[in-house]
Length: 100
Image 1 (cartoon, one colour):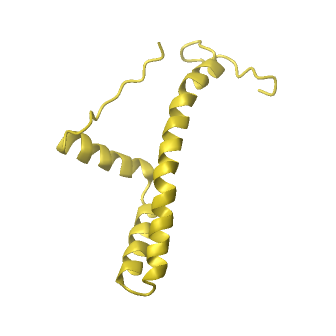
Image 2: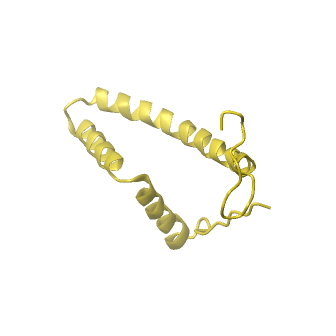
Image 3: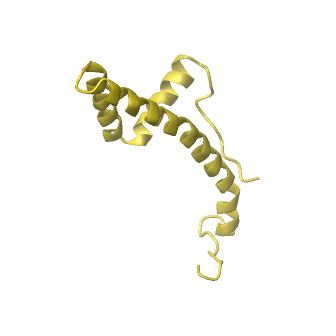
């Protein structure tokens, strides 16, 4: 690993570094857009909670934030996929990752 050789996968015999490299761009794309949405939203909600300290907007923001960080991310993802993909039919709910 220190020499840059991660070896080959036991399941399909492909080079692990090459397989990781192909998926790195998708990961960076998702991380970029998540940060672009999450950071301004967090700053806005924080300022709103401070502005209405100890009143209902502060308590609502704090309660929803605490509840959302207590739920595992994959469960929230499944719920969003169900609502947006199955019920509203805005996006497809199934995607296929193809190495080729």
